[in-house]
Length: 371
Image (cartoon, rainbow, N blue to C red):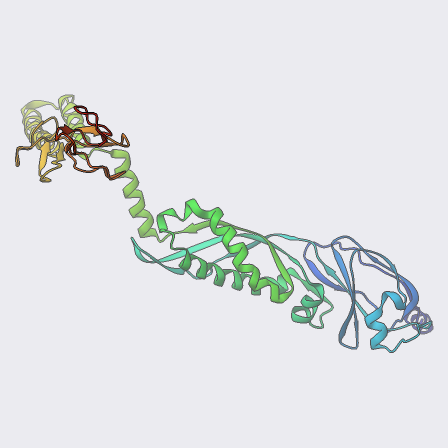
């Protein structure tokens, strides 16, 4: 048995290839061990693979997808390292690594600790975010040198921790620099994801990696901020608060009228409730009337809706619009100049006859002289 094992170990390697049956293997070391690679051996590199030859700790030749016959002309760097000036006929020793260059999909990232962001409306906020990304090995030689080391196999789990920390750090910087209000973050996920894809690439390049896709799935706000947003949404649905109060009071009166409580005690309670509800309805109606005002364009005082004149200054509550004599833009009646084109709106005198001419007139209507 020992002699057979020695024979197998000393057998020359004729075919070098790797069939990947995993989903997360990034680097696989071909089992050369003490065996030697035969001159003229067949090297098969499948799509989404690269083969890297290492000689005495130095990265030598890198092969992309294809089928190769290993000869001096195919191994220029290895030939230099091993002193093959005029070719070689004998077997040689080298470590062979297959690097998986496919895209590793559906890699999850998330903020383990909250991200601090300053918001103009809510002040300092603690945000949490998560999503997915994908990456691939862009430079096999650099990846082998900077990340892989001397392991016999390397998987996505071995590098995912480093990548996630780089992502969270980059996202924190980007959110702080974006100046996007907290209420608008959800509407900018696509823009933020694209910005992160560009920003994070500089962090992946030194490792020989390339980030292919990046998605932000959610950015969550603190619970107290979300409650405040819910309240604002409710107010927006309600609309006019005065009318809403009137509606609530009317419903309460209807419910009290339909109450069939027995006895005089029930009637007394009903009358008391009706009195209270009546007062509440009157107050709400008064509030609704008080709220139904507009600001006077002259003095700013409150003018009841429908009033033609301001009760404070006596001027017209609304300003009529007229067309500019030059550009036709709608401007306030009585304005001296057009805010769009700057044309004077006041009448001028004819230089020839002294007749009054409307602003913007090119010829005098009395004498015909050019204005």
